[in-house]
Amino acid sequence: MSSAASAEITSAVLSVPAAAPAEAAAHYAARLAFEADVSDVHADLETGAPGVVVVDTRSRAGWDQGHIPGALHIPTAQIAELAPQLIEPTQTVVTYCWGPGCNGATRAALAFARLGHQVKEMLGGFEYWVREGFAYDSATGAEQRPVDDLTAPRSGISCAC
Image (cartoon, rainbow, N blue to C red):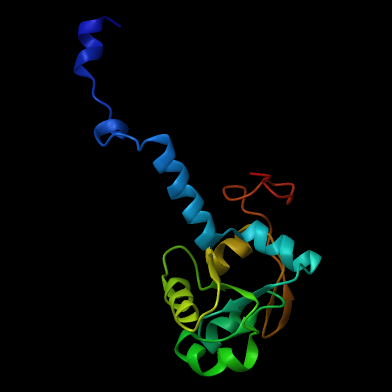
């Protein structure tokens, strides 16, 4: 391509310049302080890692449809009332809701933070838990769906990101 032709091409990505490396590092470190992914939450639950409690913040109907084994069910509207009775202040709370199109886990994380808990939001919510092929409990018992290979390797092993 000639230099004249390349001069006419503009980058949509670079229409807003990338942040300086130090600013980018601070931004991404901060995001990791607020978020956890499904695979990491699964790994912690499988190993029984101490200090983490997973909270499903959906309605009873959502919980009955399916939820992460070992999670507590505290609908967002009941966090202020139930959290002090159910969760030790030293535990880090991981909230989840339906999926990335729902901000219920974000609202729940805010409620826990306002109560003084350390908290992270599980990215992808229950949707990505199921899509990554992890087992879940429902009102009818344990269930599991095949891995959606658009979200995780077909082998079912962690993506090892």
